[in-house]
Image 1 (cartoon, helix red, strand yellow):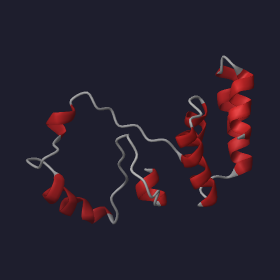
Image 2 (image 1 turned 90 degrees about the vertical axis):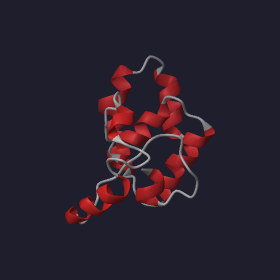
Image 3 (image 1 turned 90 degrees about the horizontal axis):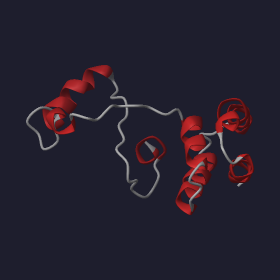
Image 4 (image 1 turned 30 degrees about the horizontal axis):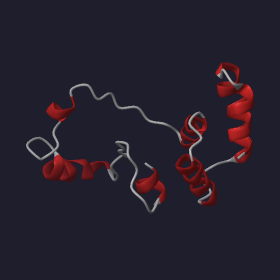
Length: 111
């Protein structure tokens, strides 16, 4: 998602996908990468797609707080993808009540 939607210049280690647009372009994509191609739905029987909104993605990175995660968050901020006030409100309402080490998460949030 970071690489495709916001042009992150390095590869990520997770599986990402984005919505195909325009909607009628989906058939072209299925022709190239659908059933019978190298990667097929049968190869991912336990894959359960989930999507994170950009603020959820940033909040998810707080727990690990690695240099790479901080760089990803900084990249998203520089691209204008993150609303600081919304992120702070979401942190307070949706993450802070559930963390075990509040000080650690608050420090990561400040970074």
